[in-house]
Length: 297
Image (tube, rainbow, N blue to C red; front, side, top):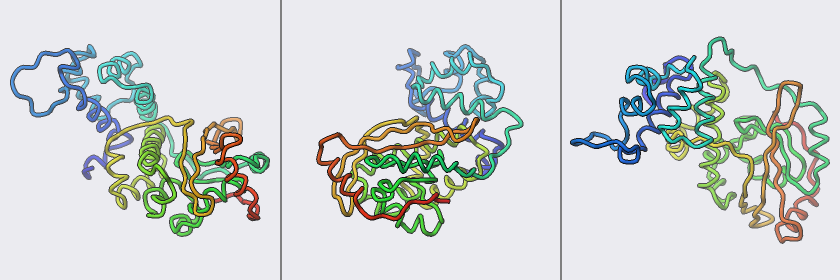
């Protein structure tokens, strides 16, 4: 990303790069447009998107330069239809528009979780459960999560920063490739989820700092970040190669846990199929004499 794009106010760079990347993946044939002569790029031109969306070329050019604040839902729906955005990409586009509205202050430091959150986690003895920020900082865990994700908590990326972060560990600790049986799949999910979070909260300094750190230090992350893929990720399967328990395939669900009248935090729970070998391995991990977990700040 060039310096002039980085200096654009608000989230204009995100809007520009997202719309341009989606326009580039649709050919005129796919859009039902005739092709005359040679084209420099395979994707749609700005004026073609404008034509199909029913807006002027100048207006769409201004939108793609990042001027998304105040654009109506109907117009964004038309652009989303032309660019063939899926459900998650459509949500991301509307998040970008909402985030561009004026007088949106940067978020303050992460508030402390109520003690009842730790009680809830500790009560889940056969599931690895934790609460995180949306940029994947670990805020609280139960004992089984500490045992399952022991390589994360022992990682230099955690020790040196004073807080465990799944994305930083995944891309900056070489040991993560041994820990995750599907490293590339998880890498895609983490980068796309962080892109979604950054679109929703473009003024969040901590998220921007994390993105800057990762794009500088990891070519793998940088490639995925520049793809502008987005993801709303709530459930799936994770494959682990645990240093003590061996290979495990666990299902996980992420839900929004209320921590106040106005705020929620993601709670992720990893479980095994009842009666399976994976459940036996989780039971083994749960039996370890691990110290009681504390909030990780």
